[in-house]
Length: 315
Image (cartoon, rainbow, N blue to C red; front, side, top):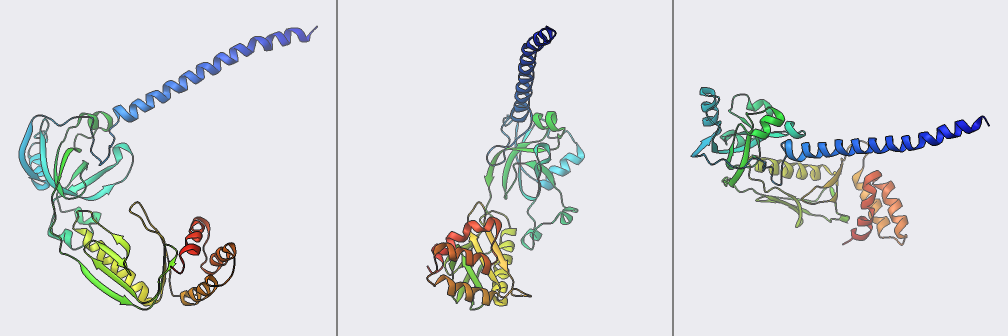
């Protein structure tokens, strides 16, 4: 008889518990909805090529094409000079500040002769005019505005230059044409052991090895040639040293490569000789994969490329 009231209390608490769960679920859904509204409506964010679309281009368009130096001079004289104007600036990104939301933008400046000499580093920007921007990337004429209402409201950054339109301006980069023939080192290209000699060619914006595309840079920045030439020289020197370059996968979206240097305990020539002999044997497919893992010291994520080696080794 004493347990009956207790069971009744438990039964009475069950509906309350269900009601509490429903209320908690509704609160969570409301909070998620508020977050989505903030993320996609109130907070500045990027679309496609990095141009913010929330605030449309302003009708009051200044037809003059400014340099970054010209913009900064005007702003120094009158911080509100461009407050209600849509303006054009010829510029390019020289550095990026990676982050999320308000902390994700590029640093833009004018094209100068030094940009053709080396990659831009943060310390080199100390004596050149710059603006913070959302949307400025390669060299071009960018239409946009300061005092963007979304960047003011969401980030308190009226000084951010927000791009609404863009026109590419070609840079007259000198054509790069270099060629080296190397009979040293080893290259496994997407599973295929390339045979000597290696004809490494830098032609325009592409680097090829025996006709296979190794690197391609088509972005419209003067540092492009510097980056390409550096990659070309590095690959040639690596082969001349007798290194092993394993190019697991090459694509525009990302590449997976590994270099085994011809130094210390690493012996690329012995590794390739042993692997080549084994791959031309009568071992089973699985046995070859197991042997490759040991000979080339392949482990973890890179193991998924073993099938490519078994399929393409002697192509």
